[in-house]
Image (cartoon, rainbow, N blue to C red; front, top):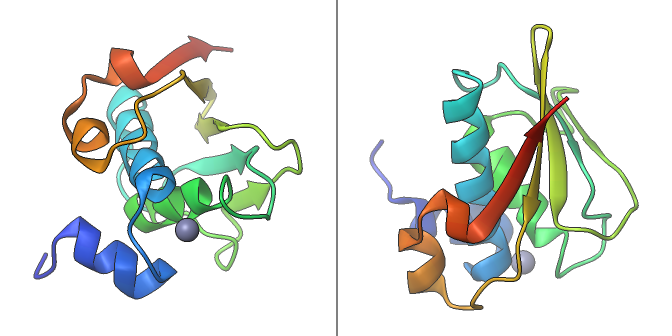
Length: 120
Ligand SMILES: [Zn+2]
């Protein structure tokens, strides 16, 4: 990729801040745990459509390639920093923990520091 993720995030979303960074990290984790490539996941994100929580959803779309436009991402109006990821017959729910609202920390933290997850 010719651009780094913060630059792409700013280009796509308008700014790079902790919630979109959190979405990128969450999407990376889901792809890793489900052994998914871009565009393979079906995602139900629970952020709702209002910033700032919804910024997390753009991070998910950016990194996973699953978007509202290609029909692979649906936004649920729950107002929580959580999402469910589906691939084949596997289903994974990832939830953000209380996290330090700092870009550098979010970029470098271990997944366990940022998220808890359960298989369904
Ligand atoms: Zn935002």
